[in-house]
Structures are given as structure tokens and as C-alpha cells.
Length: 87
Image 1: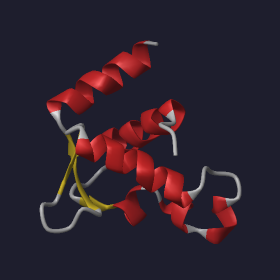
Image 2 (image 1 turned 180 degrees about the vertical axis):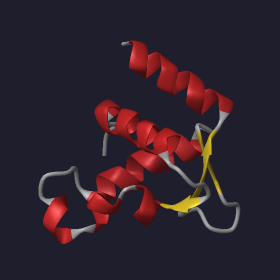
Image 3 (image 1 turned 45 degrees about the vertical axis):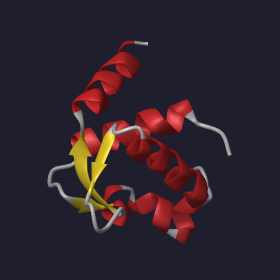
Image 4 (image 1 turned 90 degrees about the horizontal axis):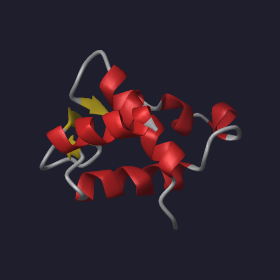
């Protein structure tokens, strides 16, 4: 699989816009977990792959014992989002 910068940008924006954190990935991006909406969105495995890349780089913070619970963006995550918004 490859990095999808458009999807990465969307994931970061979703986390920044989240009203309440921590949040499960299912609540963060319900469309990716809905069969009806999934046809118009990138595949769920691609979403999870790109999210995992962000977690591995320390851009997205997750629960230590449950990697499917998002805590928010790290400082690097906010910086990356700012850069992607400027481009």
C-alpha cells in the first residue's frame, strides 16, 4: 500500500474537528465503517493503513492499550496539518 496524502490530510482534519476526544476510529470516521457510504470513500483498509502510518510517526496520539482509540494530534500533527492546509 502507498501513502495517500489526500486521505492523510482528511484524517488530520477529522481529528482536529472532533468535538470530543478520546474517540474510537469508528466514531471519528463513521462513513468508512458504513457499507452504504463505503463505496464512495477509499477502502477501510487504506484508511486504517494511513492512520497507522500517522500513529507510527507520532503525528496522531492513540491509547497505549487500544490503538483504535484516538487521543488527538501531537505537536508534529498540528504542524503537518498546518503545512498541508497551506499547500
